[in-house]
Image 1 (cartoon, rainbow, N blue to C red):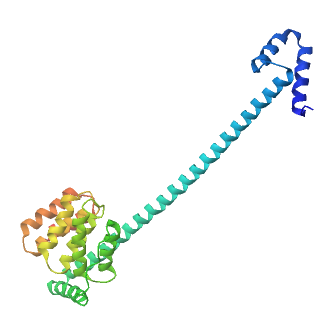
Image 2 (image 1 turned 90 degrees about the vertical axis):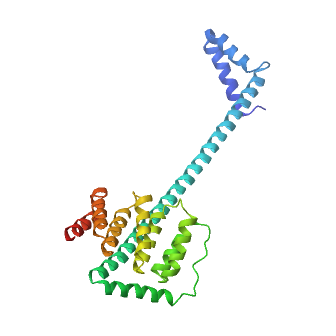
Length: 264
């Protein structure tokens, strides 16, 4: 016995043949194109074609489902990357704030006179001396991890000598890292706190020379001028302060440089 589907197609073919004699030739041609033989054979062929089309449709639907899964996965990855980028930016802001805090403390020491500055350097040496036997952290091969470890020696452990050693090694090992301006700035500040002004000026100048677009460049250049002033080299101090105003006119460092120039 034929299936309901076959009976339906057979009935439809007979109805079309009776109701539209003028289209019989076209209908016959269409059926003949499916295959030769009895009507039941041709219905079987049509059913097979229909099943193939149904399978193709199912495959397309499955492919669409797979594509949607891939899109969802990519969307999740983008969201994760955005979160990680925001974390890096936030960490950068915190580091700048910490650097500024350390810098403010140094400027306060300058204002109160050379004795206070020397006391600050002595305090730094005492803090680092208490852990002089501690070696700098071993490098892991990851620039960000090693940089954070070096900064932790300053902010958390107060091991300034070890921090200098770690940062100097880091600067040589990761010359292409985006943290290079920060690392050189840290070295300039650490040496300044130790009273080694020539070394300090070298690292501050490195920030300006190699990373002029860094947010730390204006302040680094200003501090070179401060060091020149403290070394009683008024001519160089004036030249540096004028350079700060010219090169970074809209920065806070330019305002400070203007005040310094007015006092020279």
